[in-house]
Structures are given as structure tokens and as C-alpha cells.
Length: 125
Image (cartoon, rainbow, N blue to C red):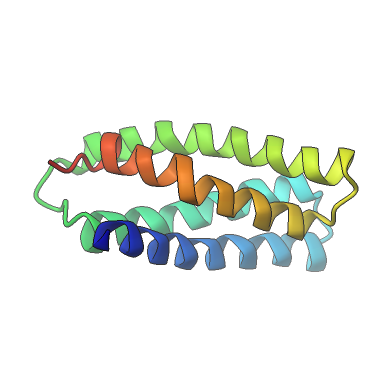
């Protein structure tokens, strides 16, 4: 349970970076929300990898190259799921893109991201 809570804290911090970049690009630079979401996701992912590797799973003794490779695979899936979720909620349901992003981020954080990082990227016994 402690690892789950620590993972959620790392996800929240990563999400703050993600949302900050997204808002900066979309609201200030007038980039399309899908592009802003992609850039935000990448920044949030980098923050999350650093926190999960060192603090959440204490996996700094393991090979970083393999972890990065696995993390990139997991986040490629996350990017696709995130973009699809945000597009669905925004385009089809008419929900503001930032609320769509919040709903999608919470759903992915509680399910896909936690389990994939725990069982695949930073495998804990």
C-alpha cells in the first residue's frame, strides 16, 4: 500500500509538470490541445521516471538503460491512451480539454501506469 501511495504522489507531481506544460502551450502559445497534451505528457513522464526510479521503487541499483527502454514502451501506450481519452471526452462529449485531461490522467494513473511500472518497468518482488 505504501508503494501505491508513493506512486500516486509521483504521478501527481508528474501531472503538475504535465498540466503546466500543456496549459502553457495551449493557452499562451495557442498550440492545438493534442500537441500540448503530447508535450505535457513527455515532461510529466520524465519527472515521473526520476521519482519512481529513485524514491518510489528504489530501483537505482538496476540497469537504467533497460528501465528507460521499458518506461518508454509503457509511456508510448500511455500517450496513445491519453490522446484517445482526451480526444473522446473533448470531441465527442464536448468536455473542456483540461477536464478531459484530468479525467483521463486519473484513470490512467490509478490503473495502467501504476501496474505497468510496478510489474514491468521497476519490477518489485
